[in-house]
Structures are given as C-alpha cells and as structure tokens.
Image 1: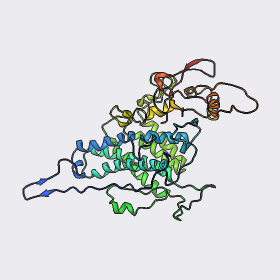
Image 2 (image 1 turned 135 degrees about the horizontal axis):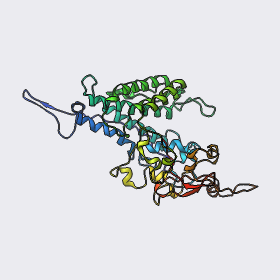
Image 3 (image 1 turned 30 degrees about the vertical axis):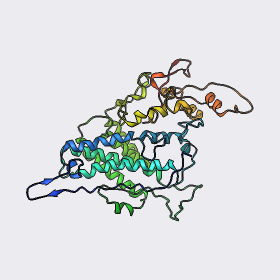
Image 4 (image 1 turned 90 degrees about the vertical axis):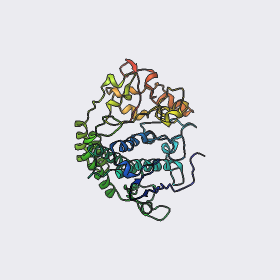
Length: 403
C-alpha cells in the first residue's frame, strides 16, 4: 500500500518581491530577502552555504515514507541493491522495492523519492550560485561559490547515474510515451532559469551531462581554495578531485580516474584509519575527521527528532529503537563476506556466521537460514558484540559504513 502514489508535478514557485521607490530612498521588504540582498554581504550568503550540507539530513521531500530521511537513505538504497547489504525479508523493510527491483514505475513512490530529493538538493546549490557574481564577489564568497559548484556536480553525477537508461536485454528503451530514452540522463536546471524554461527542458545524453558536471568541478577547483571553513561537512579540494575521479569512472576514462583519485589522496588532510582505529568500540567509522567529506546529524534536525527516520535507525542492529532492530537487520552476503581475505581487518566488522552442516536442503525458515549463514554487521559502536576472528582471536565488531 505504501508504494503507490498519484503522479503529480512538483512546481517551485518564484515569488515576486515588490519594492517601492521614490526620489529619496528605495525600500526593501524586511521579511524576505532578494537574491541581490543575499549576495550583498558575506554573512547573508553564509546562510545559503550551510543550507547545502543541512539538506543531507532533510526529512520528507516526497510524501514522508519511512525511507524519506535524506542523503543517507540514498546510500542505503545503493547498498541494498548489492550483496554488500543482504536484508532478511521483513514487514518493516521499506527498502524492499530496491532490493527486489519492483515497484519502480513512474506511478510509484520509490523512484519519486530519488527524483524529488536530488532536484530539491540541486535547488540549494542553484540558490547559492545565482546569488554570487564571481566578477564582484568577495574572496569569501568565491569560496562559497566553489562549494556550491562541487555540491551541484555531486548531485548531477548521481542523479544521472540513477536515471540514465542503459541498454539491456530485459527492458526496451522505448517508454510509454513512445520516446526512445536510451542513453538519456536527466534535464539540466541551471541557476536563473524561469519556470517556462524548465517546462521545455528535455533530458540530455551522457556526453552533454558530463560536460556540465566537469564544468562545475572546474569552477569548484578554481574557487574552493578561497574557502576558510575547514569543516568536513563541506567539500574541499580533495573532494573536488575525488568527484572528478568518479565522473571519469562513469565515462570509462579509467586513466584519468586513476590520476584524479591520486590527486584526491595527495590533497587530503585526512589519514586513513588503521586497524586499531577502525575497530575501536567507541568511535570506529564514526570519526568524520578520517573522511574527506561527511554528514553530521544535529539534535535540532527533524531526522533526529523523529527517533526512527535516520541513519542510526536503519544501520544499527543493536538499538532498542528504529527499523534495523525491528526486522530488516543489516547483514552482508555470505558469498561477498567469504571473498574478503582473512588478513583484511575490515572483515572483522561483521560477525562470522555460525557453521552448521546440512545435507538435503536449507532450513525452511529464511530468517533462520539468514541468521545461521549470513554475517551480522554490528552497527552501533556503543553496543558492539564480541566475535571470534578467523585466527581464533576475539575482539569487537564495528559499524558498516559507506564513504
């Protein structure tokens, strides 16, 4: 029941701000701000800056389903579509549409969430870009412009990969409207476009989109060095190079992807975690200083206030609240788990499965089979369980985390 929605158009209205003039003075409204006012000072544009990382934890962009809790949910979607995250069937699993590749039509809520999130996120970047004229901007504002360009590149890269139609042997590229969408990504909505322009704005192919993404990353590379903030919730030069590496991977230009990945490493102020830090039962993966870019939940965030619609709820098997503990526990495919070398300490992030031999067929209960044969990921660093490692030693397991 929770999958189906009515198709609707999401229209972002443009408010017309009226001003009165005279020969003496010009009066501006005091309860709202125009783009010109926002771009007039460093302090006013700073509000637009922090709106971008805040949107990582935006609640309810597409109707309020229990997967509608921000960018972390998109990461969760990517995981459940692979063997990295094998989830037992549960009535509490709101991600089963992606895990089982069903309810993906245009009238369903699952793809609508992805679509709505990215476009609203892109709007936060366009708000910043449209407020700053690089020819008149201060040094601080140029840094903000670099951040917005990096955020916009991230969103367009991922939304393109999500919606690009690739040739396959199961689904034809001719859609219900009779249009061949093979190789098409999404429309490009630039800053300053009117509503009329956006209504006549078709999807573009991969080459056109890649050109747009790389142009944003080039601007980010040019301006982001002016940024004075060092918080990891904002992108910096290492992130810009990392995004270029990801873009070139998408384009199949692997030599360039390798080169920019190396640049990202060389320009990063972060040091990869060693074994002791990674398996630390108090912090583990949750140390944002060890990552190039990350997101933080604040107690004021709506996703925190809900108690259950957030990253912890869906990723922590040990919590006494939330969805993971209620049924759709976080696990990893046994086949994928066994492919990890026993000498790789990251394998110890999951509990080893119980070894039980049976001859004829698996136990009738899928839940029992999964519990017996799939490694459980202990995802709450404060309540990690003990495990026995491949060499017989013991320790504690830590959160599965995606960078």
